[in-house]
Length: 331
Image 1 (cartoon, rainbow, N blue to C red):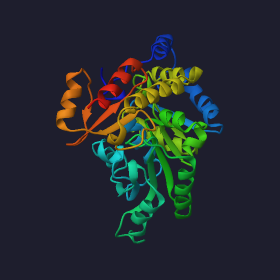
Image 2: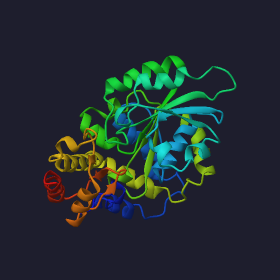
Image 3: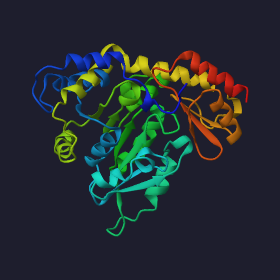
Image 4: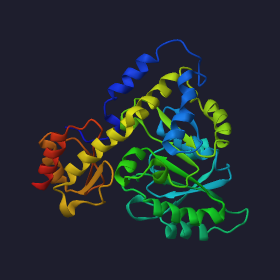
């Protein structure tokens, strides 16, 4: 009964079927029939014109997206717990040729206007300091919490007058859409570029970069090639993404994962460290209590010395989530 990470989940049967169906001769790289469908399919999701590029990893999606917004001498405001700061091994600096991450605070790994302003107000407008060019948000956040449309609008009101672009790390964007219960366009809000995650939600190795200003994609096509992410058989990545969009599979999978997370949290009570708004559950949990849970067959990661993280996936069995919830209640 594993709750280590949604990265460890199985590949959805529709994705396997789509990849098998794509196993026929077609044009290489991103000139194939399936890759050509992406712009129109995502335009349907977001009800506006977009340009979409596939890549194989979330790190590549985040960093290539930011490379369209931030020059080498610039900076990106992000939460100090953001994935681009904590879990990408310096990749933003590598892909952005030295651009700097400017770290801000906020509850539940979410940025807020006050925290962003504290960072921005401390920067002098002269050549001796790195100037901000973008803000990066994570939806849902690294602690499984979601930005409501109004929260995104308030951040945009701060960013717009300062000329800052907005990037969204949407590794668990589907989970946020399900939780908020609003159209994808509202859950993305006013962002300029979205890293739209699929791997955690049932794909094998395909993520999408969605440019709401299609002209931004032109530069990134070259940077994707230079970074070694223009795969010669790109149709297999496009096939995965299209299969996830078909029949709203991406939303059904996220709904299953979110429901399993709520089952896990049902017996947690005051142990909960963050609201459960997606598919992650963070609990205060002693070393002895974690050992007791593992002895019952539950796999999960420690989260510092006194906490644990449990992640539900699209394929988490409901009875396993319920058993874990009961075990937590019994600690």
